[in-house]
Image (cartoon, rainbow, N blue to C red; front, side, top):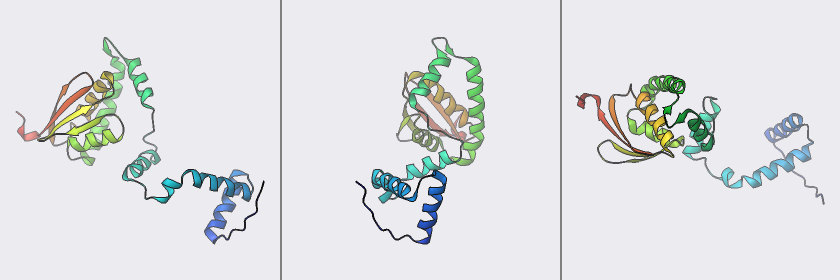
Length: 184
């Protein structure tokens, strides 16, 4: 059963309705029905301020530099290049080039390893717990991810004004950061 409703539109709403109708090839009634269904399905998100995480995700994705990737794909990729003999050397070379590029970027963007680990945690590669005195307990989803991300962390933080030591476990690592002047 169809019900008629009269709606008053301001100029912006009228322009949006006309544009959406033209772009979708649907009549104005269909556009309004779909808009209402979308609003109803997303009402919770629409009525609150976006979270900081949502804003960061938006910034990452809108630049085209990052993508969302199911964690199972990451595991599949790493299983393909990482076997009992270790990682494929051509993969290591390519990953190191990416890590070295990020070292330049991270030197400008981050002040310490804690900031980098927080960023990588946000990206979903690991979980991190900060202890006192520059010690971080890092948990990875698997041993190959631990290997891959530990290598990335070590290389991508080379330009930071600190030195790090990574003590690997099976799928965990303890990362200790010290100012570069403290190392011998």
